[in-house]
Length: 318
Image (cartoon, rainbow, N blue to C red; front, side, top):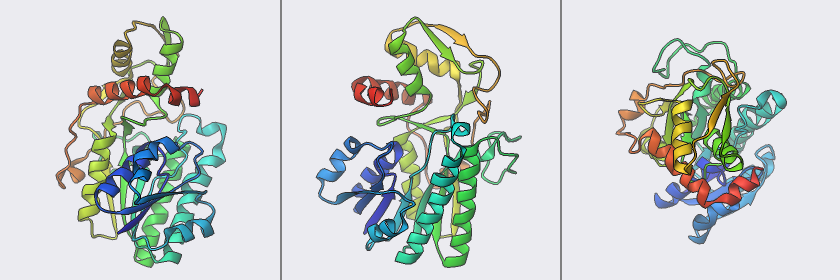
């Protein structure tokens, strides 16, 4: 069995690579290394059953050539700079929506019919139902990232029904754990190492979020890979619990041994598109036997420990 993982040198993508290798696949990692890290692939490449192709997913010819006998594509390449989407509004469209279109066309040209797609809980915008199920009505989009991922989901559905593709779509909460390279834990750790006495908190600190450890996330993905047969299957992937931003900051600060003064920017949102509550109904993936093994607090603390042991990653994002 052969698989291609776009964004396979990234945080979640590299864990998917490791798991597919463990499942018996030979894996091609396709990544432009703009945010991905070669170091994340050291163990995978050492197996002799994994190769790295440095390329952009918008380069359809190179992407199609790289598929070379693959029966599965795990599409994890994306612009994940959610917070600063308004600073470069075309980036989400190009890398998330148009990039997905390129992947789908490459799959069609190469005759690859199985797709795993990393979507996001951000496609729900600010819903009225919590925990939010997969069939919740979609409100007005407030995030360019969420809008671009929703557009990508629409393309995947159209290709599945028009060209016989079989797709599993995963709407994640924020994922934590080893190789984590952007997001609130990363930002707080970097801020506190720079100034242990005080820290800026975007919003009022009472935003409630659900988080999931990357190992639990990948476990859910593989469960769907083994079971799905429908043209399109959509799963929320998250935790039954939520925590506030203040809760998470407290765990991070204590792990670092600091007690900083908190300075809030105010308001119930940290930025435009930051939903005050993210809590997904994951009963559909739980029906496949999925159950997170780590609490949100354990996931936060494991992420802090990884960043402390890998200061080079903090420095690379400076």
